[in-house]
Image (cartoon, rainbow, N blue to C red):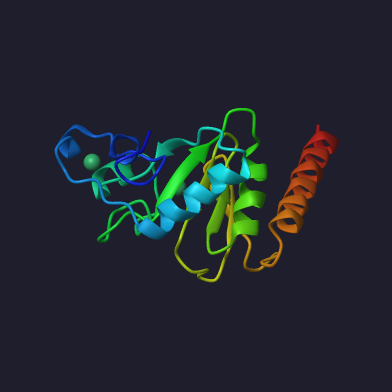
Amino acid sequence: MSGDLSTNFWKWEFRCPCLKCKRKKVRVSSLLLFKLEMVKMAFDGKPVIVLSGNRCPEENKRVGGYPDSEHIPNPDGEAADIKIKGVKPIDIGLAAEKIGGMRIGIAKTYCHLDVRPPSPSKFWIYLGNKIIYSANIENKSLLKFYQIIQERIIDTNLILYNNI
Ligand SMILES: [Zn+2]
Ligand SMILES: [Zn+2]
């Protein structure tokens, strides 16, 4: 079986979900598709579920995306929010870091991957409606950056607890 975008990926998976875009052309960067195929291989071919691929500016606004989002085709969409059943988002991120050439965002239930160069952050973490960027914290190792943030979250909880 072969997808209509790449070996394992289909246009319908990347289509902007809004009604206005029903007939719009789906545009996905071939570099991103290549990287996503590599991510799939890193997990022994397990299905990679695309939660968000292309977004038109209106849809991007609706979901609270960054105004110049990599999800908005310009001319191609350069980002995908993905999940893999039974795999933690951080583990998808670490595999993507190994593959290289991607910026990586870790959310609670998915991993954002895009093929834009670091600007300057290579990684970020979505915490509620906040985004914590790696540039001024730890921009070399995703694992180190992730651990620093996890520790800070625990610290914050302790502080909150002590104030009660
Ligand atoms: Zn749309
Ligand atoms: Zn995303």
